[in-house]
Length: 228
Image (cartoon, rainbow, N blue to C red; front, side, top):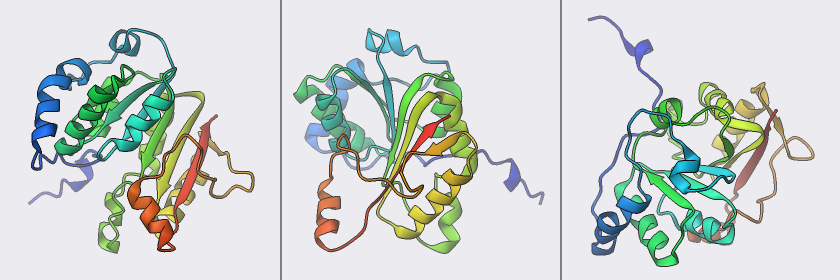
């Protein structure tokens, strides 16, 4: 059998359907037509999607969407584009978007790498956020982590000059790997004064899991890197 492993494309995650609550199902039925974007493989026109021109924040893997909805509500001058593969999380965010009457959020349920490669035009993003991505904590699975040299290089092509890539994790060994990857990436510079980890910016809300972890003495590491 021929080994074709080196031909496999980089992927962020596999789509996960999961069990929907009644509220999530209703939100998908009623809010997706207004705020959801189907994968087409064709470049997005963000101004047309949002009906205006504003700084674009992309969040990759927004989980249940609580943080993204809070950021969108707190920054109506910005537009937020979220990608998530877990369908209940998409449903929950859409529920929050509908309840909060948030017009500055759009959502996709598809593999992030394919969306970024095929649908996001170069130089259009003001900020990219990857908060608490799957750490794949077993050593043999570390290669599945999304923050790796080829992926941050791809993101650099989509960020405007001066745009920010913001990473956060509560796994120390992943934080170390993230810092190594980002420090070596030629298209970015560290925004932290001493070249290490950054303080959590005010715009990133604390999640309930993060709050719980902090109370238990667990660490959280933020990394802020500017596109140069």
